Length: 392
Length: 143
Image 1 (tube, one colour):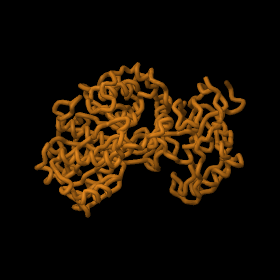
Image 2 (spheres, chains in turn cyan, red; image 1 turned 135 degrees about the vertical axis):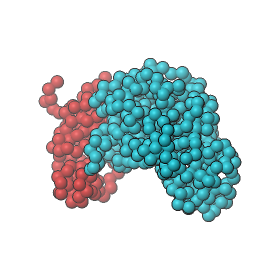
Image 3 (cartoon, one colour; image 1 turned 30 degrees about the horizontal axis):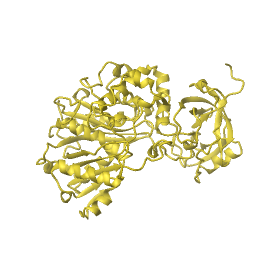
Image 4 (spheres, chains in turn purple, blue; image 1 turned 30 degrees about the vertical axis):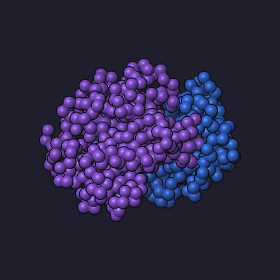
């Protein structure tokens, strides 16, 4: 490995992480109480108090700044996920803050269960009257890919079974102990939006998540061991859930860089900036809203060839003990899927746990480099981070 | 197998913006409208204020022939809300003028949905009075 000391984010580290309990429903809690619980868990993990924090990120940042009395503090209401972390990194790099808390939580929002979860039903006039929701948007991308490349249904089911089995063995997961699953179990579950069966899709849940970022020289004294950021990126093709999600959607410039390859540009750039090659990546904590999105990311990032993702996932490569273990905590399918920001922080928290060597399940021995991602083809955006166990 | 029909329940009605209002007014008159860029000729949808092909801001409404091809589809069994009768089929239709939109397939059995299927627009009013551009298999198609 030839990691460059000039990796663009290497002067910032993650010093604290925390996931609260994940549950279908957390009685008596609301988004704020769950988010604050996550924040205090992350502070405790980092050995810090709220008064060590001089920046707060996420939709509830203002509430945290007021209620904990740390005002005045740097803030952002950015709720996209990894872009929230990137903005916090830039605040630290530019001297606007030294220690930034990113907090999020969801509870008490999904009460009308006969409809799909509110954060999966964008109310745009061009899609809502046609019964669209997130699963249908992702399905339209997947159906076209399956038509063009002829991937067997078992490939998608193998992705879902692999990730759900990761949750089955994770004591912290929403669906801990609910498996194990075979690909046939996935295919036998009821259809949602073809090609997706229920078990190909993200779950819905309540819970909170928080991370703490600190300037690397401040982080060096942290316990447990800080995890370092190397490089990252974010990109999109347009606003989410308004335009037809065509697999061949592209901009005015590079007509080959279509929606099918969403994330390729930022991954190749980040990998190069970090001085890494694909083989250096030990764990792939990929965002898993729907099973095909894992295959799409593996191809877009170049872990396998175009149209080869189906075969790639069928031979155990992405499972625990495989060459490139994917979404090792169970992901949105099984670990938990609270709305918006919370779910997006979970993949990064898992990457940190892998590099610390503290996972309660599916720990990859000696993991040094983690790829964490967010977003997908349905909403037309993707973001990612490369994390390192070792200081740059 | 289910014969696909327009939704008759209290489904969400489109809430038009200033930019999109002519599109929905066209639907009410059973005319499918789209914007064409005066600079480069690109056909675009949903209605916008700039051409996504050349960035031009001189856009003019045109009436579509209403015929196109299914680019992708998904048969939906879990309704967005209980107002939708399942299964229904969401489609991306590429119109013959080169623009695309999201709609629902009607006028055929649900298992007839296929990429490459030739379709034509079929307007239907939903509860509350708004008119939606649904698509049905092109009349006189070869089996």
